[in-house]
Image (cartoon, helix red, strand yellow):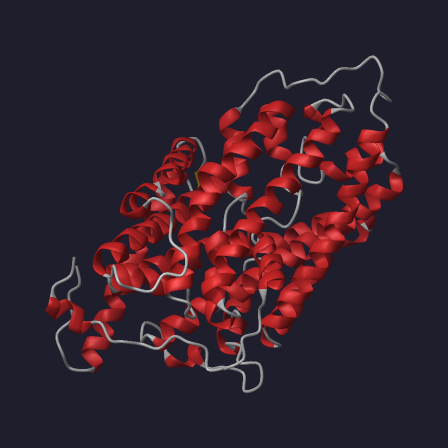
Length: 461
């Protein structure tokens, strides 16, 4: 707990959006959150392949209870109590001080490097299934650059356009899987003589990690809280609804295909859903699902640009970044400098042939999530009278206990990180270097600010 003197060193900053118009209502927020977290059934192949049908269904049902719901509860309380631009950065900064607030933003932006370069790449991977031309030379890279450019422009046009785009994409992505489910049920028994099979070697840790990845990112929706209509009530409702929708989008298609007798080993790689759709329904649905994979990658990138771009905005308003990152578009109030800067950084990574490491993403994201749960508990202790339209159930005990299971699941990523390697070292060591760099950058920035003011650097606990 900080002393009164340290409290005075933390300036009071108004993070609220300059715009008086609240643009996002419940269902557009649900759709945007859906793409920040999931993007649909795509990406669940590793869980089915690793754990088999029954294991995957069990994981898809248990993971949201232990991993997603606690996070959704935490976001519901904090976003309702502090509905400000910057979301989780603002919560951690207010509860734990500017140093930890900076680390929260640092971890999220570093994780975005691993996240954001992959979605245009996924778009191109699906596109090549239809048009092999885009797999030749630099054609795919140009498409990826176009995706980054279009999403940046959509975000500069405002959050409402992004959210409405997400809402329509959600509807379009749901339809082909609904067709697959209906056909799988209708044709139950068409593969006579076969039974539901399981993989010869069940890798439950891989299945759980993949499921955690597919249920990860709920807090990203918090960074746009100042632009949500009635956030005190809307956030808690949106989180609960989205958890249910995401879980159903994973469980129902998996359960339906399990009835056909197709071996889970058929889920060999990302994109296997399209091949299975051709087998169960017909070639035409394969084409539809390939297009759906492209739309899913586009929708996830588009929504995450909206989320990540609010972090530099809030940090600039707080004095942690140069003020230029706080510039807003005169009409849409979008942080256009932050959007363009991040878009350039992500575009520069499109040509890198690095493997997407789920364990590093979960490790870095998990630490940022730990800070958010710590902020929840700290604010309950330090500001018990803070208006909270929604509260984590269980009183003070619930506020402390709600983060236990997510942190236990985070242990899986630490275990697996020892067997993954990047840049000549295991993923755990590489992740620790990235985490340590955040403290170095913070103290260098603090020293620069202090030097400019001709004062001694401030020390925060």
